[in-house]
Image 1 (tube, rainbow, N blue to C red):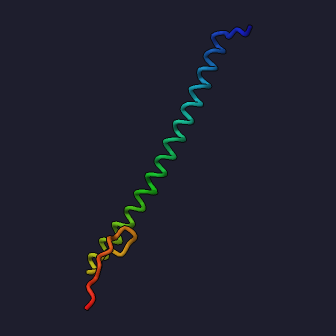
Image 2: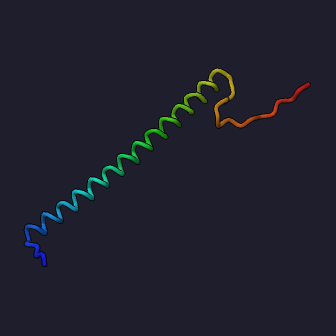
Image 3: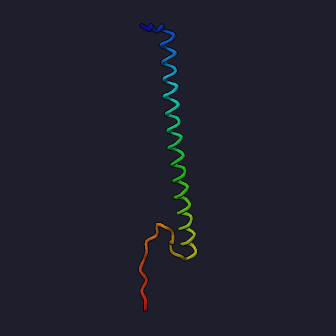
Length: 72
């Protein structure tokens, strides 16, 4: 039988808490990185749309709706 003395219990608790905190921090960092990449992508799309509108063009990006053109 293994007996844990109070100082060993505290050390085990501290180690488990540190492991948990590290994993939580890594998960948050991963989520923040994904969000930053998404914000960048959306910012680029908005920038293109604004510049196209300012130049009197229509959006030709991958998310633009295809409008059929009439042929004479």
